[in-house]
Length: 307
Image 1 (tube, rainbow, N blue to C red):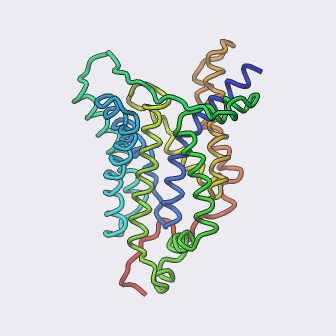
Image 2 (spheres, rainbow, N blue to C red; image 1 turned 90 degrees about the vertical axis):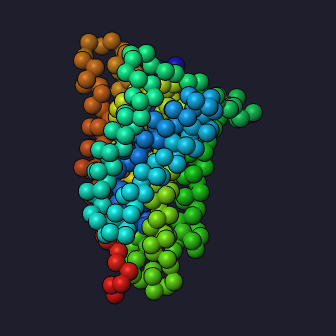
C-alpha cells in the first residue's frame, strides 16, 4: 500500500506539467493554431522561472516570468503563422530548436560553466483543512502545492468555457471555420493571437513548474519530451479538458512507474524503464489517436482578404 500510495502521489505531481502544457495546446488548436513548439516554450519557461526564483527568492514571480518569457517566444510563431501565413509545423519545430538553445545560453551566461548546480527553495504545499485528513486521498489530492489546485481548476474552467459559454463557442468557431466565424462578426485574427498568448503562458507555466515545484535546480534537457507527450495528450484526450486530464494522469503514471522500477533493483538496465512513457505515448496514439479529427481548420492559414 505504501508503494501504491507513493506511486499515485508521484503520478499527480508528474501529470501537472503535462496538464499545463497540454491545456495550452488545447486553447491553441481550438483557434486553429497547431503549435508543436511546446517543448521549446516549456524549456524557456523552465529556465526563466528558475532564474527569477533564484534571484528574487519568490516562486510565484518566477512562474509569472516563465509564462511571460514563453509568451514572448511564442509571438515569433504567432506573427509568422498568422500575419505571414507560414507553415505551422515548420515554425513550431523552429521554436523547439531556438528556445532550448536560448535557455541554455542564458543559463551559461548567468551561472557560468561550473559543475556546481545552483538550487532554490521549492514552493511549499498547502494542506486543505479537513479534506487532507481523508484516508489515502487526503495527501494525494488535498496536500499539494497551489499549482496542483490551479491546474485542476483550469480543467474545470476550460470544460465550462468551451461547452457552456458564448465566448467559448465563438472561440471554437475560429478553429472550425474561420471564414464563417468572420461573417458573424468574430475577430479571427485577434482570437488567434489570444490563443498564442494563452498557449505560451500555460506552456511556460508547465516548464516553470518543473524548476519551482518539482525539482529545485535547472538542468539542460529537463523537459525531456514532455512537450511532445502533451501534444499527444491533446489528441488522446479528444480535444476536451476532461479527456486531457485523464490522458495526462495516464502519462504521468507511466513516468512515475518507470522511476519506481529504476530504483527497484530488479536487474534490468534502467534505459528500458526510461522508454515506458514514450512507448505508452506511441501505443496510445496508434490505438485511438486517429479515430477522430480535431478542429477542421487546425494548421490552415487564414487570409482575411479571401472569400
